[in-house]
Picture: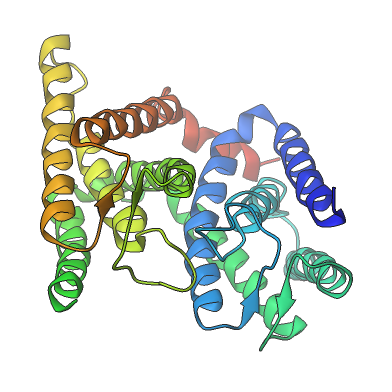
Length: 155
Length: 167
């Protein structure tokens, strides 16, 4: 089996592992973050492929879907769920910003390495910092939504 | 082509208006969660359905990026499900609950069949109308079970959040 498929398999395995680590009493927060991240990522993912900015040569459901199902449906939503579950909401603004920067940087570095050494993703008209910014924005939008969803008392 | 585009625009408009009109403001969270849940279920189920050529979508929004119908999967049916979920009576007799479930999936299947027959938005290949009916029932049932689990204990989900913030 090619290295790409091993990576896809391990992404599913690691994501499932992360989901299993989510504490039982925060599972609903994780669900909302996961699902809302899906709709944001799915739409953006399709748009960037449609416009030819990115390409995923090796992918699941290859004949019908040119975007990355693994990343958009499972991996990024999982990361986003973890992001929200362990969000340091009582800490200072610097720690919160650092938390954002840490998540975005780790994901971007992972993506750049995968781009460089495998055939899972190819940047056509894309740069690593666009990934960084879009990941950051997505996490922020989902965070806002979660705050709204779980706000106490308000309609 | 023009008719298909108009139908897609109408679906977006009708979807937004219907969500605002039929779902009371204080139930928006419930409606929104139902929307998200159905959207996740239908994408997951439609991927293999389209891959194995049960049906296809000749006219679609992102012809290059995906073979799936974006408006229908991503927006329109999830909105219909969220209205169904918020409107359904929880305390009615089992018979009235079951019949309302079947009326909903039948009407949506009918809509789907009409779209299939008269426009290029959908095209059944291996799928038949009764197959669509079963498929729709399956999607609705699974989404409903997941949403019921989420809202199992009414106040719990907010308590979780506040517990989380007070850690």
